[in-house]
Length: 347
Image (cartoon, rainbow, N blue to C red; front, top):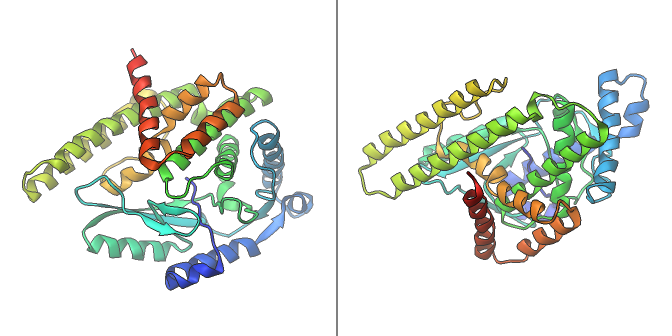
């Protein structure tokens, strides 16, 4: 998962405590940067890390040459933060609604999460929201982006991934620098996920490297099954939340629906034969469904756009920019129409 945190000194005037930690955390990341070439040439550098950074250099150039993504200073430096995550995101939703709480910032607009460079502060914020009766979720984030406003480094938090996941993440983050709409997280994340998916397919084909379990066909089928299960569960939950039954009965039925979703996802994982954990394991709540909707909610629509462009990226970007130019409601309708067309074509 990625987080877009754009920092400027003026932000401190808006929400002192929050932006102070954001500015401090960002400066820590920047202070720890070293040029990738320098790290590679350093005799003290671990051989595994050296190999990963060489791959990053190659993937970064591939993103420019083959994926038409921005050529700038991003991901040409490396920072070791001495921790597992760079930030922790807080998600929140009302107890009986799938509409996430949003926070608004300059430049990036309103997004469905609040990012903290300290896990303790993130959990403190989550506890505060929970006391207000909201469903909450906290998740560590390994990748960090300022949307090209700064020269973002590759982080040690990304180096525990497989090579393919690391490459895919680079493509995802650079896609945000290609096209980003203030205040539309669903569009931004689904677009970047689509670009990363396209880029990874091309990278694998050009390099002739084998897909690992994380990116082979069985996982793709599983992800589609889980997405369908979540979509069905969301429809059930939305119908439940719109009903006029009592609070306690609604709470009980919500738990039944959530537990059923968790069990169904686990059954799909077991049947797939893949060695992945159940990222929707119980106890589930509304807030834990938010990230999946953000990152993949419109992914089928972007896949359809790419297919309709005969898999030409220049056309795909132009069509995506046309969508970006629409008003929010019109854009949602346009994306939904692609999804509806896909469903009607399914056997």
